[in-house]
Image 1 (cartoon, rainbow, N blue to C red):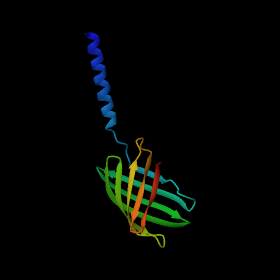
Image 2: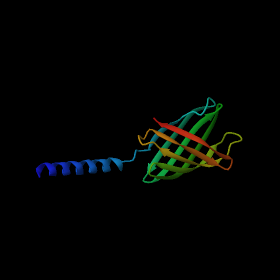
Image 3: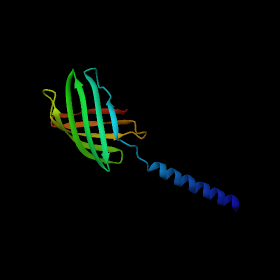
Image 4: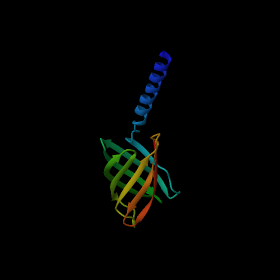
Length: 129
């Protein structure tokens, strides 16, 4: 009987430990670097602030040496962050508003997703610094 109780207690501790670990979500606050799609992009840096479920971002990058700055507000649900951006320093010919939808990797080190605008969509990827 004692051996059975020890096994039951050990299993309960294992289940509780797993469920506590499974509920921990990685932190998105901080500095993120763009994963360059090609050599036309440089110096891509995204700063994310999370306040509860609210997300605030500022993003800087250069395309063929021309700087672009955008900021945005949105939210986080689980490992997905969604935010609308407004470009304050545009690259000529590019749109000035859009939406980014990014999924945080389980290890908290990568954000991968898409940008969406009136002109189309494309991939986005960032690595936590």
